[in-house]
Image 1 (cartoon, one colour):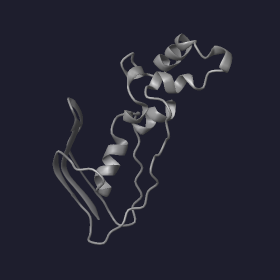
Image 2 (image 1 turned 90 degrees about the vertical axis):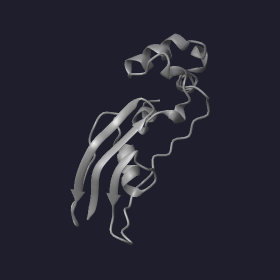
Image 3 (image 1 turned 60 degrees about the vertical axis):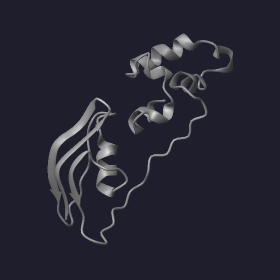
Image 4 (image 1 turned 45 degrees about the horizontal axis):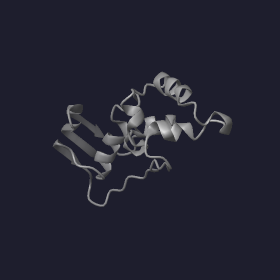
Length: 128
């Protein structure tokens, strides 16, 4: 059984979880469902031990293994805007306004467009 007790995790001022507790019993299958950027991957990384919680406990039986497939995306540009612009037809390579409009429609702020693509959650990375 995996036991999560009073789990808290935040990134800077963004609180993802506070006081979360649950059990996953042997033979149970669990799916994490939620909006992009709201902590599904972080919760999973906490459960498998790839990341540490700010507070709380996670216990797994000794020798217990959790199988998973990692999210790996490769980016060639240093900002989300530049990365998205690589998908424009060559003749429109300087039409950054088109990409800005599309990214805004996908939930990216102007500040987000200047962030490195690798800093986004897996869900937002897929949008790029």
